[in-house]
Image 1: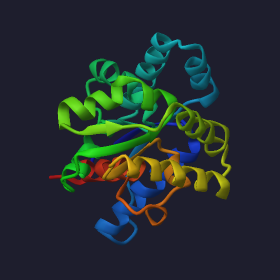
Image 2: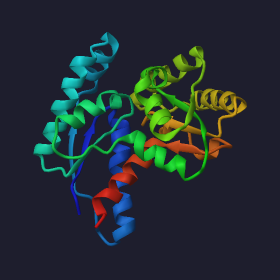
Image 3: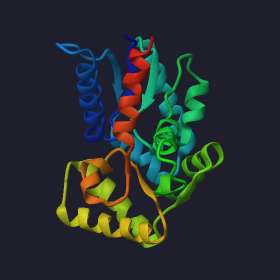
Length: 231
């Protein structure tokens, strides 16, 4: 079994889900008392949020490269960034370590490809929905048409993520607001929805939606187990 490297803490609420899903998946596949070999570096999230707020993306990149190197030194065979937004600097991180980086967009796109869907709605942080690092990878590498909510709804989603979910608050009212936003994307011909924030699956489930939801937290975590157990 390979050792899975995790850069976590963004937020720890969703990183806990990674840990749970990975270990449950290993136990399901191998049985008995089996669990995953994991090397994790958990960051101080407020430091990351401050870099977000002030637009200091160069410093954020250095921060993430340092975290990845710590995971590599801890003995990981490959690394995951346990957040969608910080994949903004994933290519720079990958270029500065000697172990592979398992990219959340690539494994999510593989799941979408299996459904033959082409027009997909994307929910996530403001950065994920508005900047190109995520959408363009899906468009250029996987020929997917990506649509996002309007500006008002993007702000609503970002607020739910950072002011509620990252603080452990799960509100029924926010779930209903997300369902309405998803309905708008469905009306705009979205065939599926990417939950492009690792906190969103804490709030919204497949049972809340009539079209396929692509839970990036679970997809990423299960892909890590696939890689850890292959061969």
